[in-house]
Image (cartoon, rainbow, N blue to C red; front, side, top):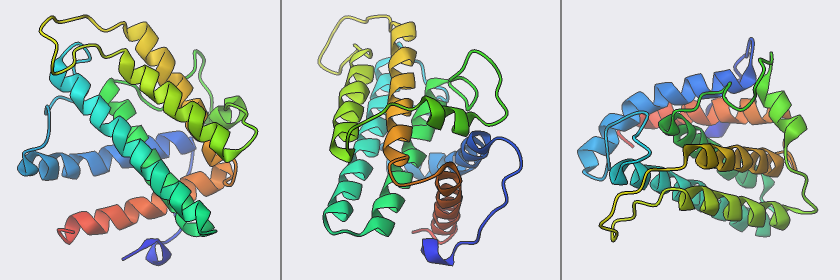
Length: 209
């Protein structure tokens, strides 16, 4: 199964909530799969942001986001816009899971309640001159978010995470990523492709892909 076999899903209510809710469903199954692989740093969700293993898991997911962006750029060089969009949505899967692991939810990005947080994120997204500019800023802010997590494997002293700074950087990362998506995708495109790819991922889970 691939994304062309997936069906459109009607979203009632907040589109970003629909994305976070679906990612939580996927996480339940992927948790067991990753645990069996022996590569899961910690089973905690949300992770302990002051703990080395929790920090390692956040950094693991940060790299997964970047890897998908790299694949998207490779598709862009080949003028394969369908593949480009799908890879960016794969990155959105990982960014959403990273955010859940950090203890954030769909409505954590704003101080007030909105009916559609995804539309608000698009309105509030970073403005870029080109896709490469967006990617450069994303890599920088994602790197600085990870830099807030100081308990690296080679360090012997434990440092408490500046969580205010960490979440400030995470907010920047989201606005950069949504800004990158919005170069080629509308709000409806983002949620539609995300939900279709999530159907593919659920099929892969069932079929032991």
